[in-house]
Image (cartoon, rainbow, N blue to C red; front, side, top):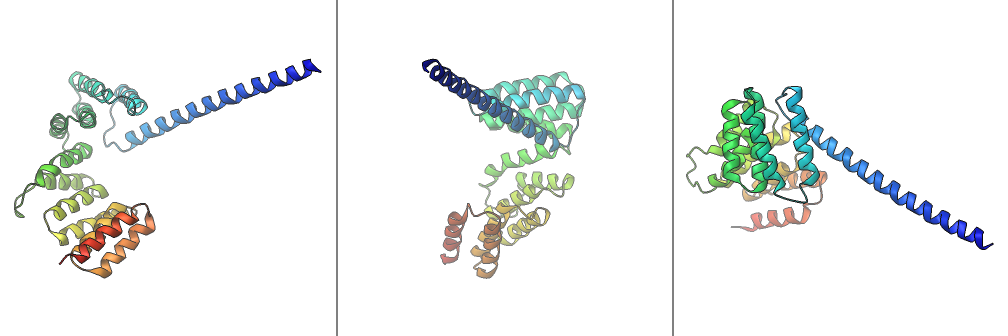
Length: 254
């Protein structure tokens, strides 16, 4: 009887161990699938298709980033250096621009914003239609443009976002960022116009819906503000309290 109990207990232990092992393997496989899907998405969103060898190198570095980005920030600097190395070695302008764009993104994630901007600028010089580099360059200038008070002064961020739209007229984010720029300068009507264009090309762009509601609230247009407030909430309730408070403050200001 004792032997039977021991055998049963041993079976339970072995079974538990196998279940834990299976769970670990399953979790690891899911993580790998997620990284692979994210990597594929990054490539799908890229305008340029480089040669097979270069794509393999890019994929390897990007997987490396996705795998370790939450553990060590310095990994971005290492990746940036590797992308720069590729850019120096290749003679293909598009390949070089692609590498510089990714190097810029890595420098940006590391906190080296000025260096990132230089990489994006170089990428745009090599490939003017590189919308990724153009958009990131616009984001870089956005903060410095916030210090410009004159409405008639040409802003670098506006220039870059408009260039993005020349090559990609369906970029909802570019319209959104243009709206943010005009809003920052106090041009509510133009901001609303850009936000609406963003929603037209992507009817699920919640940020533009929320910002449109705020801009109408600034104009004391309660009906339109409520309309876009409800539209934003219908798509995502997570920002409800924050958005409601902002709109109330705008409407209450004299």
